[in-house]
Every structure is written in C-alpha cells, then in structure tokens.
Amino acid sequence: MRNHVLWPVLLFALAATAAERKFDFSETAGDQTPPGFRSVVTGKGKPGEWRVVLDDVPSQMPAITPMAAAVAKRPVLAQLSQDPTDERFPLLIYQEETYDDFTLTTRLKMVKGVMEQMAGIAFRIQNETNYYVVRASALGNTFRFYKVVNGQRGTLIGPEVPISAGVWHDLVIDCKGNQIRCLFDGKELIPMLTDNSFVRGKIGFWTKSDSVSYFADTRIAYKPHEPPAQAIVREALKNYPRLLGLEVFVLAPDPHTPRLIGSKDPKEIGKTGGHVEQDVIERSVTYYGKGKASVVVTMPLHDRNGDTVAAARVIMRTFPGETEQNAVTRALPIVKDMEQGVTSLQALLE
Picture (cartoon, rainbow, N blue to C red):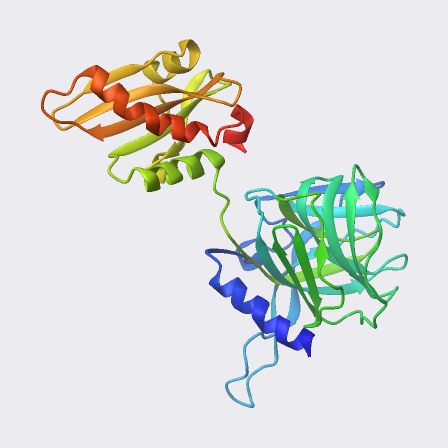
C-alpha cells in the first residue's frame, strides 16, 4: 500500500515545487545531440553517441475517446553507441543548471545490447567521476542505486525484479536534503536512502557498455538554488524592511572588477560595480554619498577571520541634518548582522 500512496504524493510535490524544467527533444533536429548537454564517459571506452530519434511513445494523458491513439511517434533521446567495453558508462550531462532538492520523472526504454541492457539517471553530478546513479537492467533484471566516488563504484543497493526490454518504464527520483527516494513503474523498490556525499549537482542520462537506450518525457521540478550572498541580503531586508536598497559586491578574478552577487533587486545580480566598491574591498575603507532623499554607505564586509571579502552597499532614507557620521552609524549594525552569515569568500559564492 505504501508504494501506491507515495507515487501520487511525489507527483504532487513535483507540481507544487517552485520551478520546473522540461526536456523537449522535439526542439532538436533529428539525429542531433540536444543543446545544453555534454557527453562524457566514466570508466573505459569512448563517450556515448547521444542523438534524437523517433520512437513510439505511449501517451501520458487518459484517452478522450476509445478511438484515440494509445501511442504516438515522437522525438526521444537515444544512446546509440554499441561499444562493448566493460566498465564503460556513457553520460550525457545537462550543463545549464545545478540542483539540490528536486523531483525528476522520466521514461526509459532499454532497446538492445549484447553485454548490457541498462538505462538510468545520474544526479548530483560533481563531474564524470563523482555522482549518484539509479539504473534499471533488462538483462540482469535488477533495479539499483549506487554512488560513484573518484570513479569507483560503491555498494549496489536495490532488488532483483523482472524488467522488460523494448518497453517504456517510468522512473522517479526525489531528493530532499540528504534523503533520496527512487520509484520504478510506480513502486518504491528501494527503501528511502540517506547519504551526505553530494548535496548539489547536475543531472544526466546514463547507460552502460553497449546498451542502446531511449529516454522521453523527462522533467525536473526543483527549488531554485539561492546563492548564499542573496540569502544574506534577503535575511537582512527582513530584519531592516525600511532599507531602500542593499547590495553585496565581490571582486571577480578576471577581469579584476567588482561584481554584484546579492541585491534587493535580484534582476541586478551580475552587474559590474565601480571604483568605490573596488576600493572598499581592496583597502577596507568606507564611502558615503547623499542625495535629496537617500544616503548611500558602502562598507567592508568581513568574514569570520576579520578579512574583507566583499563590499556592502546600504541605501537608506535620509533626514534633515543627517551627517556622514549619522549615516555610517545607522549602516554599521546592518553590515555587522550580515557578517554573522559570512564564513569566507567562497561561502558567499557557492
């Protein structure tokens, strides 16, 4: 009973998550690799040959009439290389986003293979030698989860279960913090897993050896990652709601220019700063500016060791007779509160 209850619960969680990415392979020309992906291989042998092909895919929607087609020919993602090298794991990694908490759903089909007939999803990928994977095997009739660390495969977890080749199967992966759930054809075949090795990473399509495998109807619902600097700004604005603006700048290494990494207006993130922000970071000085209705104080933002790692630009309403000393005195506790969440420059950027 638990398996049947959990399936709709995870789908509801997916629909309720803040953002969603659908991989629409119909937007890629036939026999081409979808844009935004990178083909790599774990282990030995050559990378896979990932192409968009046409295949009959069952509809996910209930039939409106008895005469409605049960399947339709649609573009799907295929791994077509039949390199039989053992311990060869082709990966197609989606490069454009990194995920922490997410729910991924996909369909997969193991088409053929002499040595292996496997298909799966790699997730929380750090690189091609560090990630989690959930995969199904039609030849071995197994559904397994394992971890790859520095190219070495960890303990295989999961049951033996009949898995047919040549038919589409449903796979769901749900990650919340260090908890991982994996469902195959609507059943939770593996008990909930707990692992702290990888908290964020990319996702990718996975096969083994000479497996020819197809993937379709892939979507990932996720909580968008909030950079630490933006979280610090958001928390400060909650504590000081009357601020007109609040920004955090760091020095980008190349070119050596201040860049905005946290702001009251998130659309501004990424913009270039100027001499003031650079001087604040390099010399740990404070700048003050006053307009008709506002004052701007730009101050050093220190890490836990007392080193200046960023510049905090605080924009406040002014009042008649306000002096530079008044403005700096008002801005100082705001910046000090922000520093409680700054352990290092790297922690601001992750």
